[in-house]
Amino acid sequence: MSYQLHYWPSIQGRGEFIRLALEAAGAPYVDVARGDAASGQGLPALFHYLQDESVARPPFACPVLVHGQQVIGQTAAILLYLGPRLKLVGASVADRLWTHQIQLTIVDALNEAHNTHHPVGAGLYYDDQKAEAARAATEFRTERIPKYLGWLETVLARNPKGDQHLVGARLSYADLSLFQLVAGLRYAFPQATQRVLQTTPRALALHERVAQQPRVAAYLRSDRRIPFNEDGIFRHYPELDS
Amino acid sequence: MSYQLHYWPSIQGRGEFIRLALEAAGAPYVDVARGDAASGQGLPALFHYLQDESVARPPFACPVLVHGQQVIGQTAAILLYLGPRLKLVGASVADRLWTHQIQLTIVDALNEAHNTHHPVGAGLYYDDQKAEAARAATEFRTERIPKYLGWLETVLARNPKGDQHLVGARLSYADLSLFQLVAGLRYAFPQATQRVLQTTPRALALHERVAQQPRVAAYLRSDRRIPFNEDGIFRHYPELDS
Image 1: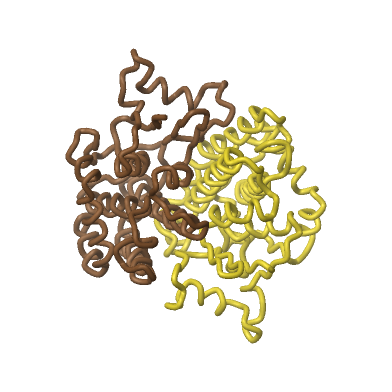
Image 2: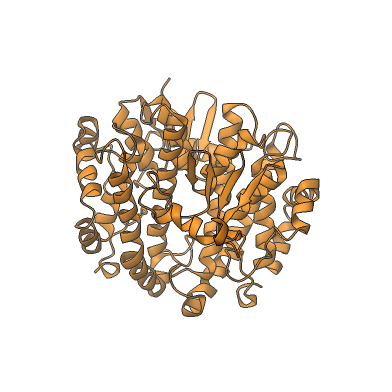
């Protein structure tokens, strides 16, 4: 049964963590909101799950994954569901919980990255909060990027199965999410991220290995991969980097 | 086997969601950091899990739950683990995932509440970001509190098993977390929250029912419940409410 992903059609955003998992596993899926509204896809299908009163368990926001009768919101919860089905997580309870814990921490980093350009509120434009954003970005660059990437480096260094993967000895969705976090930080804060990555060689190497995984590499070259842009979570505003 | 909770000893913070689950279930646990360092408890025990190189799977931050060999960070992941063990979640995969999804959304609300007094960065004092905080709090009060409490109201209204609980027909950790979210919002933003709660009668009623659950009520009266204060996530700065 094909997976239906519902996410904003013009940005990578949170949906990208789901796209990467589905793509890396070679799973059949439809990126519904990028389809044609005339054929039952597009944004109306997405808004159905967010707004229609017939949805008994309404997600707060997208991404939303629909799989048969199951409707799931929250990026980390979707990956918790997909992990075993896509063989992107270990078999033990402990491995699954640890992989989820890493994912939740990457989501925290993502929230803080978003906060650099919207520290006052997501409902206002960046132009209406540039002064606050400049301060928030300085704090994020100097304190938080080193802390998050440093923690991922430590996780790799301490993995008893070696430093090629975050959990165990094979690819998990946490590895894919590390790839995406590093890609986003490099796009948004190229100078600051480059400096930090020089101190986290294992995280950098994993990022590069994931990019070369055949299915991921094919995806990144395809037009299914939406380019980074200034509507997403990772935005390159040169005034926020240094 | 007793649960060990490691969390900052002087605030409710994120640890409170774990304390409430353990208390509501009547589970044996030790709030380790509030114990005596001379007897192996206190903050040194907490810092062991955050900093010691011998920890193979180091949490990024606390709360940390230790249960036998299992060491778990991230509030929502801890509740995912505890839910079935404390009988605070339904038995089906779908119910567990939905309860987790609600918890993750409550954590998002919590992050945004924290952002109202620390929009620039958690590493700076509130006094160093009061101007930014004033703008962020206005946005949070007028847009986000209604959106989050309104969503929880919708979840209750659409629950096929009735509007007494968020999931199914019995108490889950999501209900406990709704209680704590409402308690925190009332403390931090009493005027704004009171206005919103008049439009979300089911959420308000569930908050009040949870407070009257015998074990929860006994906990709230005890000195194990740390009072709200201006070091936690929910802080009452009168200038941020209206």
